[in-house]
Length: 221
Image 1 (cartoon, helix red, strand yellow):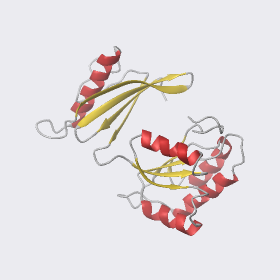
Image 2 (cartoon, helix red, strand yellow; image 1 turned 90 degrees about the vertical axis):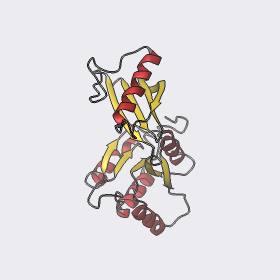
Image 3 (tube, one colour; image 1 turned 120 degrees about the vertical axis):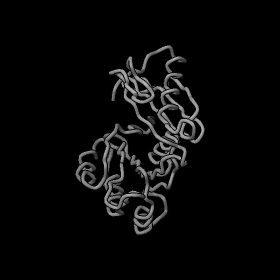
């Protein structure tokens, strides 16, 4: 990812923009702004609200994010800026969380899901008191927009992570609107299990590997 990230959220009435800046290998929130969502008449184009929210962010922070010549029709960002967007107008992304234990890695993943404005479908963990069959049924029937998988500290044992990964793969979750599509899956757990996760999930999910969100028991990123 680049040094700066702009994220917009298109809501039913308000479009919000936030700025994250990378410092010391971590991203920090540096700015917030908003504008009216322009999905309805007379505009009927959400890009207008997106553009206005980012221009407001530029004004508030006294910085440039757009290239010269950028417009509502064509958003052009500077070379050091990544842009992401989502919509919470329908309630946000529906996220299935998978974590090693309910009160450690799973809780970290839940906080990340809520922080992204998501709707938590359910949380699966080794100690969630459900049988493997019940977990498989839940995974298969949940149809998440995205799966967030966290578990284990870096360098620690990863047998539990492997067990959960195999359960997730056997559950065969599918997208809501595409029978043959792949569900996006973010793995942010024990780095020692990354190769196994890539091998197991590589062809089944739209897989992204991120740094462990809980690399040690005392550190929660």
